[in-house]
Image (cartoon, rainbow, N blue to C red; front, side, top):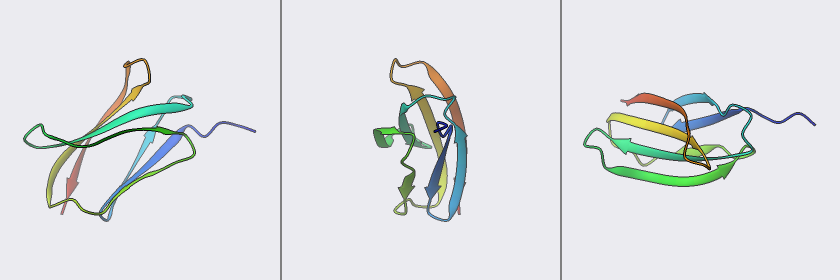
Length: 79
């Protein structure tokens, strides 16, 4: 049973795919353009992130291993 290595993040109508680098669980944080944390959670590879309550703007999504090591950072524009 192969491990899923891609997380799908849906913020309003914008979908972002992030390679979780074969990690079973990851931490993610969503920041607004002012650097304020909007959402922060731990999830396993079988879950996707869905947030439909974001105002228009620029957001930063940071995905980390449970050890804190950075996996990926994405900038997302919500219209």
